[in-house]
Amino acid sequence: MHERLDVLRLGYRKGRDPRITTHLALVSRAFGADGFMLSGDEDKELFSNLKSVSERFGGSLDTNHVKGMSTLKQHVASGGVAVHLTMYGEPYRKAIPSIRRDRPLMIIVGGAKVPGDVYKLCQHNVAVGNQPHSEVAALALFLEAWFGDSGSDKKFEDARLVIEGTNKGKIVHEIE
Amino acid sequence: MHERLDVLRLGYRKGRDPRITTHLALVSRAFGADGFMLSGDEDKELFSNLKSVSERFGGSLDTNHVKGMSTLKQHVASGGVAVHLTMYGEPYRKAIPSIRRDRPLMIIVGGAKVPGDVYKLCQHNVAVGNQPHSEVAALALFLEAWFGDSGSDKKFEDARLVIEGTNKGKIVHEIE
Image (cartoon, rainbow over the protein chains, first blue to last red):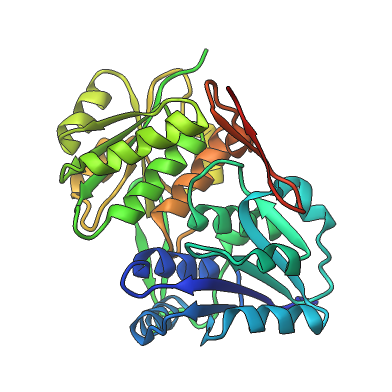
């Protein structure tokens, strides 16, 4: 039984964050999330690019523009688990065994300024290293650990392109 | 005995890539690299920001603006090991045990267009998942696996600020 896993990016600013946020969404897809939600600015082009990746490389990633805080509150109120990724949280390898897996999971990735309520609403505040680095790296390492080191080996249904990587060069399988 | 580990970012474009490249450099520092080298455009502000992070959070990350291909060639010619991170490479968990650890290591992170020579010059072409996602995520996962899951727990000397993360909120140690 697979419970749903969504990533929620808070406080997106279209003019400033498009590439970082695109990377967050691509990591969400590649490492096994079911959905990617964006609060802050709307960005249809970003969602369209993500759809194009799934059309070529398979799988599906639900994308939605949402009101961040109310989405988080509703998720928790309806019994869901929320994990806030922050450099001020508990080390992720210590935290993961204490996160319940029998409920839908929402992973919260902050923007420039994270409202203090996020720390309180989320049952878990989790750090991937207590150093400043990157929300993209933190999300990838969390998902890889959450799925037991198999996130990055995920296979996708309905792929038109499948890359078989080798040390000497790529093998691209194009599927009719 | 710790052999030197550098990250080389090829083909930097100042107008387009500053945040992704800053994240690459911060991941390099946080996960244990000794140096971060940039080819393509120069960016003194980016290097100055990195220096400021090390001044607050400790450690030191050597930063240099270099000519990418000649730096790579020279590294390999002098006996160094070069690992190219690419979605077309061999899966990283399979590759890592075959990468020798008794030589200085250079990790190559491509830009928009990677010259074909990079694949040939590097002894290893390594993938973190054969899906499109993020060079920031790939670098972090590679370094975490290379250092045996301890990259993100790295402690830094000379830190003025040390974050002790908890589930309920941060504890910041300011060191006199």
